[in-house]
Length: 357
Ligand SMILES: Cc1ncc(COP(=O)(O)O)c(C=O)c1O
Image (cartoon, rainbow, N blue to C red; front, side, top):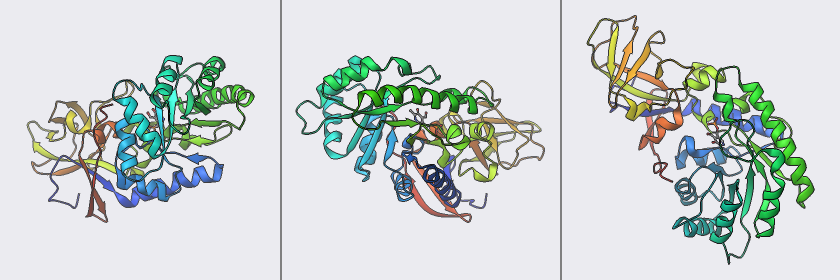
């Protein structure tokens, strides 16, 4: 890595690769006639969000109120909280304030959650728009698609504006090879939900889906909107799941060799507090090292990564680029991103507040 002065561990983005990734996904969505509403929890970074919007994104998706406030403050005027947001306590006022500032949409998957949302915005001069979350096979939140009728009817009765349905095909991540099946499940779930919504609503429903691997697999009917997040940077999971090649990975954790305790091994200064401990069951190791692709990041403690299987003897002080297993959780641990182009630092971008709530 040609930046010896880097203070490690550091999140480093190659802005030229980032731009290529942004343009490619925007182009795919446009070609398919589908709105791109990228999930910004991956980066929580206002300068990066502005680039997504400049590439034609129709607003941003977020998971938390913190993230929604960060991007509203940063100038984004269309936000989707794709989460069954609980609007109790001081969140009610925060949600109401967001509803008054930006074009806000919120996920809902229960009558109780819908009641809380309606209570939070009671007295506002326009209704809150919600999307019904359906479970397309990820077995996380969401109602089964053929059982949304009662929830839709309830939302309409209490004055919420139901715009459509959304789902996240998280089961695409259960092992390599699952992506086409998860994408098909997503289309089937949204088709079923769409039929019910078309019957109950007075306008064509928004049918919002997406993850990075399914979006890279193909964008197709009945989706009207797609919300990939990880595509901006790529990560080691995407290298395996979505066949993202190494030269499309835009973000690495730069780390330094701080100890060479045994032959063929090195200890890096990027532990679980820099790389995060996220590791799918089907993946061995905690990252991929660009300078030593044969090696395994075999163990992490908070500030140490133990690398084994090195072919070339490392030296204390060497810099390496580690592609984290899951980039969203790694970026969430950082405070800033070092922006490089052609091997030179060109900017520093802040990372927003933690995923507190
Ligand atoms: C509801 C929702 N939408 C979209 C995404 C983005 O998916 P990906 O991380 O595969 O880009 C996620 C990621 O977890 C999500 O939970």
